[in-house]
Image (cartoon, rainbow, N blue to C red; front, side, top):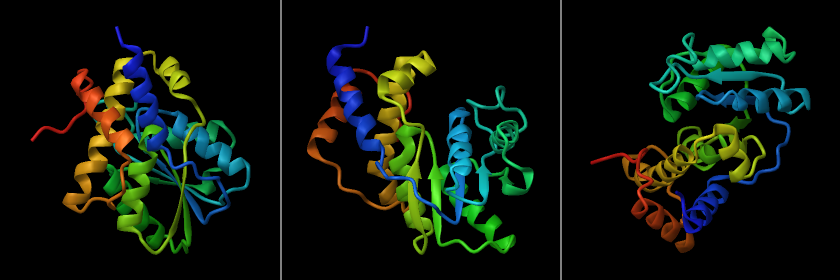
Length: 216
């Protein structure tokens, strides 16, 4: 059973991991591949709202998507977007990236190869990966403006959609750990972490939500 304290701590991380940007028109949207087709749905909604003329879906497969998305995350996202009315001419697919850094680097190269000028990027991810994706893009592509976006859901709504609260809590803790250790490895920008967030993270680790932590 997950305690009320753990729920409260997870809600703090959930809120912190989101950048709370207001979507605005950008040169291109980049949808970061994952197990969650909701990323594709949000990207499509932004496209239909006129927020960008072009979409890049990026992602190969991982251990969590290999069976569900055998043709690759980016390709399954593309198929979803086509079903939802986005023309094929407005979609580019980057099928090789296996982590967030590669998502950014490979998408940047693809857009350069296609001769697409980029001044700003709508970066679409899962809600609990907004901050890490933003910090990664700012590190690897500093000359563009980055606007973060994800499905507008509460933690409770997201847990209900996944039907696995422990997995979601593990993901939140893993995302927070990466914000702490990846800047030291040069993967993303260092960001200030409020003490209340650090304390919530430590309590969740102590409560056993460690399934997505990187081990030394």
